[in-house]
Image (cartoon, rainbow, N blue to C red; front, side, top):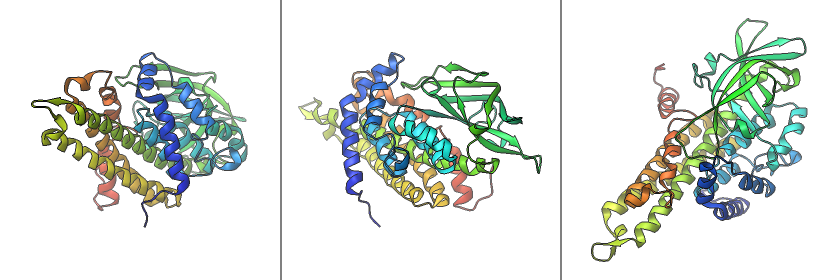
Amino acid sequence: MTFDLTSEQDQLRDAVRALGRRYGHGYFVEKAKAGEHTTELWAEAGRLGYLGVNIPTEYGGGGGGITELAIVCEELAAAGCPLLLLVVSPAIAATVIARHGTEDQRKRHLPGLADGSAKIVFAITEPEAGSNFHRLGTVARRDGDDWVLNGRKCYISGVDEAGHVLVVARTEDSSTGKLKPALFIVPTDAAGLTRSKLDMEIVSPENQFLLYLDDVRVPADTLVGESLDTGLPALFSGLNPERITVAAMGAGTGRYAIERASEYTATRKVWGGRSIGSHQGVSHPLAHAAVQVELARLMIQKAATLYDAGRDLEAGVAGNMAKYAAGEAAALAVDTAVQALGGAGMTTEYGVATLLGAVRAGRIAPVSREMILNFVAQHVLGQEKSY
């Protein structure tokens, strides 16, 4: 057992940290409040190879795994730039295509995902079904050489920045008549695919959308994989990386908040000239939050290691636990930082309250803390399914 990164992973962490700090949280907030995207940071991260660290080398990537991508997610967040589309495009879409796509799909899409010139977003959540793919209402039917998709999706991140969206739909199994999941790589400008922006109380350069699919006709080669049997394993192959990288982003955000608060409390002096951080009522909550963030980081490392080793079932348990731990730790860290800074904590200038909405959302998405507890109760503790 080792807790040490390889020399290459250490170098990656240092390099990404340096890139993130050159842009910083001020850049992130400025872009978000202007309704713009972090285009410059994304392009530079792609040019330096950080967006494709988990993509095979034969398709222009770094040949690493989710461990490396989690490092990228965490360090950019720790610099105040938590980029949600790192989770959506490199973690989910690139993993699904690399592991389950056809060779043509890999050649067509992975190089652009690796260098950042292309983005593919992910559409599973629906207004009625949430993320329960057993009850998805989006249906794909075969019509000659094409597929025709109909349905609605919600809370779909970054559609306005992407050339394609990975749509989770259900198709009818001709042998049983039952519906089964299938994934389609749909161009965002496809006829019949429309969107409306959701106004969110989150400071983020990435937007959320409702998607409407009305007789969206796509060619047969947009179906991920060689057959419909690919759908279920392809779907699950993207969910563990999603949880792990979301957790890494949360841990990085927690680190950022604690660092900002620690700098402030170590230098802010009142009541006799002592720093406010010398008072246990200030320092202990920050120390407690730091412990929770570090525990979450260990769980993230375990989950990523298991996933990269191909131990998917164990990685599923660890990934859910990591996401739970990091979501709680990030929310605690940001809230504690705001409290430590007092009134300054609520200003844009000090750069912590700007993260309150994002870390609160991290306890809900991409899977809520309650559903993770259900999962752990059932699959780890052997309890009867509660829903």
